[in-house]
Every structure is written in C-alpha cells, then in structure tokens.
Image 1 (tube, each protein chain N blue to C red):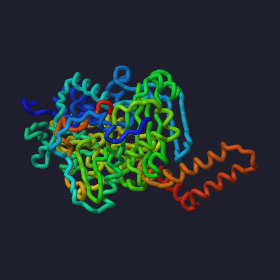
Image 2: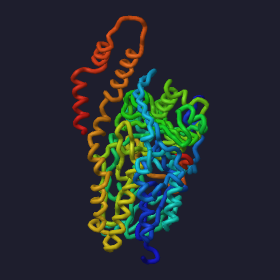
Image 3: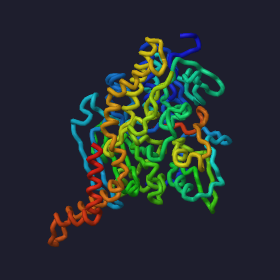
Image 4: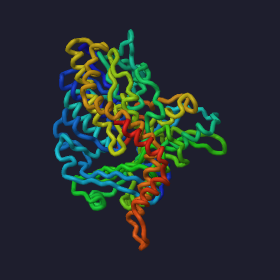
Length: 94
Length: 430
C-alpha cells in the first residue's frame, strides 16, 4: 500500500472543527525532553511536535483519546477535557 | 415522575449506556441518554470483536438484525519478528456455533447507532451532540447533570462515559488514570471488498478472522497488533501500553505503518483503500483499576469502570460493558421500586456484579496485567520462536541436531533465571 502521512490519514476522518478553542491546554514552554518525547511517541494523531527545541501543539486532528492527559497530566498537559458537544472527530466507521 | 425529573440520566450513549437505557425503558422508567457525539457511536472505536453472550440476554438473536460485520470463525495468534511470524491458527465449526458463544467483528459508529434505535424503540430518550459539563451534587448525592449552563434533574445518574470518565473523576469516585492502567490504540479501517477478503483469508460469506500478534508490531514494547475482518473492510491497528511508551524510538503511528508493511501482513492489505483513522484508550489493568462503582444516586459502568480483560490471545471489553449496563439498570429498577436511590438502595449493582462473569473473570485473571508487563513475552519469546522455527523448517543438507538447536536458542535468548522467573509469574497469575 502507498505510504500515507498522518495528515493524509486524518484527512479521511470527519471533524467538526472549532479552530479557536482548544480542549487541551498545553504548556508550550515545557523543556524536559524526556517528558516531551513520550507525547511525541504516543499521540496517535501527532498533535505534538518538537522542532528546533520548541514544543508546539495543535488540537486540530485530535482524536480525543486522552493519551497525553494520562502521560503528562499536570506537566505538559495543564488541562484536558472533552471538546464541546458535536465538536471534534465523528467516526463513521469506528 | 414529575414533569422535569427523569428516573435516570445516562451519561454516554455507548454499549454500557444504551444497554442500561433499553432495560430501564422496558421497565417503564423515564430515561434520558446524553451523548456528546453527533450520534451514538460517533466517538467510539473498537479493534474489534464483540462477544455476543451478554447482548443476547437483552436482545436475543440480535445478530439477525444488528449491523454486525462478520461472525468470527477463524482465530489467529502470531509471534512476530522483523522478518518472520510464527502463527497459530484455529478454524472450526465450534467457533461461533450458536448465539450464546458467538463473537462478531463490529464497527462502533454503525453498531451503536443501531443499539440507540433499539433504546428509542423501548422508550428511552436520547439527546446527542451534548457534553455533560458536570454532575449536580446536593448533600453528597448526585441529583442530575449540568450542560451548557442548563440543569437537568434525575433520581440517579448512570456513568457510561467511557475510559476517561471525567465525570466519575469529578466526584472523586475514580482516580486519574495511570500509564500502567491503559493502552493507546490506533487503527485504520481499510476497504478491500468482500470477495477479496474472503479469498485472502480463506473465509466463506459472513465468516470472519480475528488476528492478534505480539513482538515486532510494538518493537518489543508492551502491547501488540490486531487485524479483524469486517464485511468489506479490515480493521488493523496497534495497541501500546502507556507505561512502556519510549521503549523504542518508534512512535505509535509509525508502529502502525511498520505493522502494515510487515511481510506477513502486507499481502493481505495489497490494493486496499484506507477510509478512516481512529484512536482510543483501552483499560488494561483489570480488577486493579476498578473505581468506586456505586454512590448516592450514581453508578459507574463499562470502560468508565475499567471493565476489560486482555489475555493476549483474546481481548474483551464490550461484552463487559453491556453486562454492566444491564446490571446497573436492574439495580436502578430495584431502587425505583423501593424509592431509595441512595448508595444502599443501589447496592444491589455491586452484589450482582460480584455474582456475574464480570467480577469472576476479572478476579480469575487478576495476574494477567502483570504477565503482560513481562518484557520476555514481547521481546525474547518472539525472537526465540522465530529462531527455533527457522531451524526446524530449514533443510540445507548439513548434519544437525534439532534438540540441541532448540536448547541453544533458549540459552541465547534467555537465562535460566529469567525463564524460571517468567514461568513463576505465569503460574502465579493462575
């Protein structure tokens, strides 16, 4: 099968996007690379990126699994809750 | 009931919540299901396979009308290395031979919508597209929900809000999840066509395969790969326990790409079209992660209660969710008859859980979460199996001694102490 990027894959999913409001509050100033590495490796949607020593995060494409909350609650993930009703991913297969 | 008060509000329209709703509505209680997705199932994902026995109790012969994908008649378990795979396969008419022992591959967005229709037919009200912000608590008793500033009241609330269960956490019934208690699952649904699936997997119409594998899919970290045949698609994915993230430098999404490209997997997927990508947490720690299950005016069910068993060769959660939803509903019906929704009035939920397969199996398999954190299972064992199989099946005209080869392989991949240690862990688990 042809290689797909994570953006290609997420592009197949149906999202109701609230571009402005993130349901996850991330501490972008966090610098502990061991902690950052866990989120880079675990997030199935690759919402977390670490480029040139700078952490970035986008809630767009988030699959709402809760992995980052469990791994880094109170550290990188300052606050995590479900998006408002109807917002976010809407699986058609599941 | 009064005009504006429900007998029960159910947080979450998944399998536990909808099962509870059906049982309550049939008993004539006023039930409201609040679901945060566009429709029931919109936020849900499974590997996955549903063992049918618990839903049979609520809707006998449900598979005749429900949107199941295939009936599982073929089981496959593999130990994988980078270039090899030692497989155990079992196909038999004994598998899924009758409704009481049948298991089915399902896709939750479709399946849950069907179950929601059943709940509505029974008389339950379902409001989708609404997130419950918090539970209303008066004098230590749950009396309803708040959503977008609006308050809704009920005699009790059944929490069926999934593995993250923010609501059970809010009222202190459930602790924050720990990385050793859950795994992340990432899955692709790939369309191949019904005939192609039948041919490649050797299936007759309506028959399905469940295939679990350990070792190379997660590069030796705790977890594994799965592949289930649906009607005209396959569900393929990776499950990785969060406490072992970082054992390798390969990310979960990359593990899935590697797994799809594995020489024993890739030929099955050739020419397929990915139609959806999904992710979810899976409760994995069994009886060790069960929260408080009953409080004044509140009960916890399904994934929110951590009801799941992973034995490596079989993974179950959905049948537990359905059973717990039914048992919670029966406890609420009893509370309704007694007009006592206090913790004591709802206590029959915990008692019936203890008598059910849920607690008996969680207790019986309480050692399994420990086994599945043994590195040997995911690293040494697949490598050893690969090595021994390669020696057994290779003939190149040189004299050899298979028994010595096996002993040498064991010695290379593990020490006697490690082996004894692993066997002890496994025995202790039983």
